Image (cartoon, rainbow, N blue to C red; front, side, top):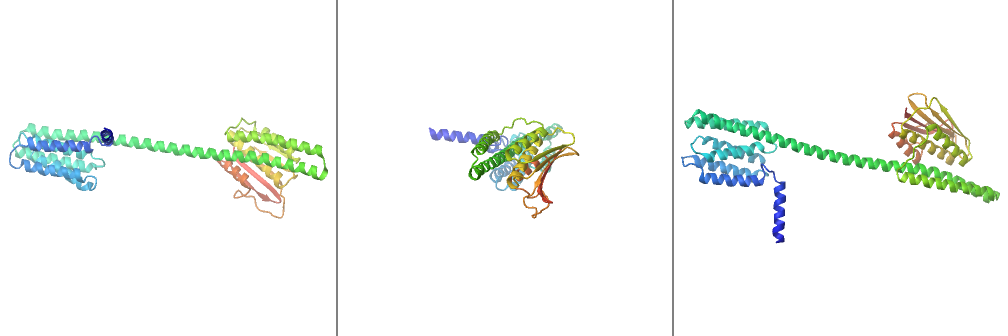
Length: 390
């Protein structure tokens, strides 16, 4: 019972996957119809049965070789459609019409059959049929109706073929669209992962950098000066920084970003916090009239400024830092500069390979909003310059 059920399911799957017009089921049924018509419908006039037998052999060759040798199979099918037209003029020869219509209908509906081959076979069949009808002495009615039926059959088949081709193209387009959407979704997911990685680095680099400075100062005050009160204040400050960094890291992991204040105000808050955390002189200058920027551009500028300040505190502790926000021109420019730790090692400012991983992530973030980032040492000054379209 289970074996019969599996066999039934397999047959059903094969039938669903089979072409409903030129597939194996249609060919089996049409082959049985041709054999039956040759046996019971073909007239006994001399030459009719041999011609139909050769046509049946051509049909059998097509069925047997269609997959392995398609060119041979299509030639045999064209012969199977053309031969019955030579004896279609014989009275009461329904078998010839069945052979002719079955083979011709299949020929027209075959996938990837060139149009020139369809038109050539149709013209040859009509010419041979008219010649046979004229030689058989058939009247004008037969000479008009039978070729007209063939033309109607071919037109119907071509219409059906065009409909199927359009349906296949639509299905292919939908499949390509679905694949494109999947690729875009995957690319968006990768971009989001990269964005979250950059956010995590910005948050952790700033928080851990400031935390390290506070702990280092606290250690110096305890070991060198024995100032417990000042060291305790530094440790408390470090604890607050750790709490703030943890909160920001959680926000970045969740890929959430609260609305930020206007860029000059946000930079002012950042500078004030850096000044308090590192006891450094930080000057903020705003030039030109502030302009509204896309949220992504403002966040990118703010994150880059934070990264530059963190690097300044790490590599040039205590050195004065100048932050300039310039709204003049078609682009908004942010510049963060401070004295280089070693003025003798001078290298031109460039956007290629300058800075560590933090500035690399900042450069990627700025590029996403259509901007550029340059970082390097020139004239004994470390300078980070960012431009984004206004």
